[in-house]
Image 1 (cartoon, rainbow, N blue to C red):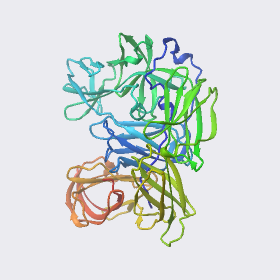
Image 2 (image 1 turned 180 degrees about the horizontal axis):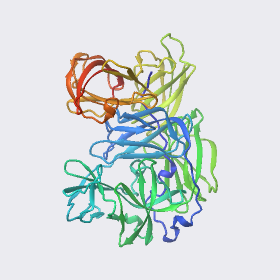
Image 3 (image 1 turned 180 degrees about the vertical axis):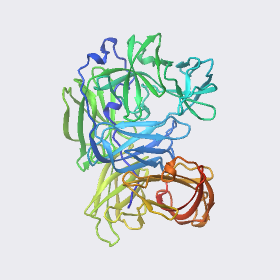
Image 4 (image 1 turned 135 degrees about the vertical axis):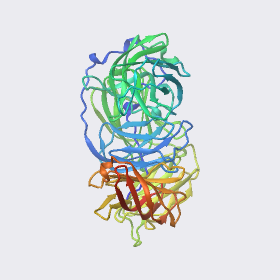
Length: 593
């Protein structure tokens, strides 16, 4: 079977409300106990998501591990990832990114049935803020004067719960809710649930990420009977309007929602609070919310990957969301607020605006047709044929353009899409055509955009590259376990210095999970060996496996980044229980880097 790990977003509106630097009056803050909220229950949908992962300098992050809907993959050389046809939640789908040297990147968004969505996640560096002696306790101050204070003998080893007595490395970062990139950096979104399970939207006055580790990297946590103290620096633009007490929230990394954890008290330009565990913490005023959705199109059809901005007119704070491949965007917005709707171009210029609202109930605005300046758009069209030189009846064209990828359907052999661009940009673009019936894709069509904003790729042949991905393995000559994408997750994981790492996980069979590493550099032929193996079907995954013997591993296919690596071989391992296992592995996986 096959998978093409490309992509698409839409950020939940709820994820950004309360992120501007405009002040909020003290009397607008109302404790959530007095807010007439409502419970939103999970609703499963089948959809796709692609995304872009950036570092603090807006550079692509290569080889990051990304999970969503029980699937795992890695970012490619462009920092892109894709999940096709996975189980999502209509109101709160979660994508999690992990990369060495950074806090987890977590994004929560809504998804419609059958949609192809896009997210952009900017990682927060995991900076060592200071060290504390576990026995005596102490405090660590961040550059913005936020503070983490640990009491004496209050920390345990997270994995075992045993008391920890050594040096504590305190990794911490302030996440400023007033910065322009908060839509990309916010952990989760600004959706929350209070103690009544009511879904709310948050207005942040300060946010911290904290993680405790031993010098060897062992994860630590606050002991069950202890607390730590956090001090949040209030951004200067919000300080005068900050209430004297405010709700305190921690992020549930599984649900992607902020949970009610009590209150924080204001002292000078700070909020201070006792916390019982470390994660992401947030000082926010909650507000009641309703759901809003709309579809944006031009005269040429849906407008995908367009950044939509909604700003409260009476108390200016903004929300942002990206349209999906059908031009649809949806999410939670504040109740009974008049709004300014804007579409933002790729150079952050406003290319469309109108006043809408207020809304006191869930609302679908239907289709909004917008007329855009040609200098701010690019129309891309072409055709695709299959291996029999017949029009592709059902497929997708994937367009790499200005740091993103746009997925548009191929219908009866043709495709066309209009996307936003920086003013009259002539940046290069790539197009890959995929025939869903045969799961064959083309080699990339590479060309340049133009000032006129109209590009025709001509006819592309979706035939040259199979998109099948799998891991097959057997233990001691027994049953052959199979993992086949996209139903199962197979991926090239973040690259080691001396080895390339591959992994698979099955959601629908007894194949379990397997990770194996192969000596670098990879090349065609039998010049590689297995250098590591873990497998849940060997002693229930509880034993440590060490390589006893690796016969030459044969690499039968080694494509460019975005193409595929295939190979097979046998590895013999010793388990920590004293048993010996011979494992045959055959694989074909998309090359991520």
